[in-house]
Image 1 (cartoon, rainbow, N blue to C red):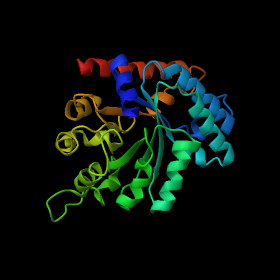
Image 2 (cartoon, rainbow, N blue to C red):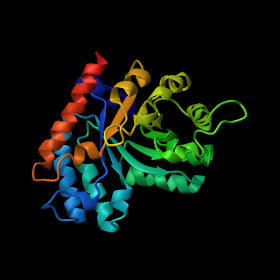
Image 3 (spheres, one colour):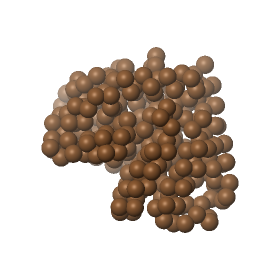
Length: 268
């Protein structure tokens, strides 16, 4: 199973770091062309520099789709450069009526052979099922996000006494297995992890928001770790844009190594 590959990497490296390739063309280091090919070359250098310290890469598709057909080629070339040992995520946040979701799933599981995709759950079960139909793939469902707007819907109280996001976690978890489904929970919500783990004790959680967004890795690990670690902590800007100079790859490697070393210490 794809989850086993992820667990093996975490155990071997004592790291649960995911490097986010949110490769904004306007933020490419000085001297690199602000083109789709420049994004590809930048990504390849980042991957080569950080692969030893992380277990996963997350490609935020918006930064590639915005470049048109050449951006899609950059995304495909980037994905092909990621070592097969690493867990790959299309951060696409898809989710629509069944026949549309089926096409999204085909796009990101077959045409672009990612291991996982992020999806939005608010259209319900029939919008998620087409992703779950693919074997040896993982569907990562938005749970509790770090953005201010999470208060608008996710953190609204239901008549049952649950928060809406808690109902989402509970229901979605019943639609498949912990091998098929992961959830997104933002790092700035670290203390909520304790109650979240009571709802989804066995599922992996993708955790954005550590680093540039100010989430605490120590708190996320304390409240969110399960017996398989069960966490995939994403850092994007803090790693890939650690330097704007010719040393960007070396500085990215140092930043990734720092995260990995902190993670190793937290797992002891």
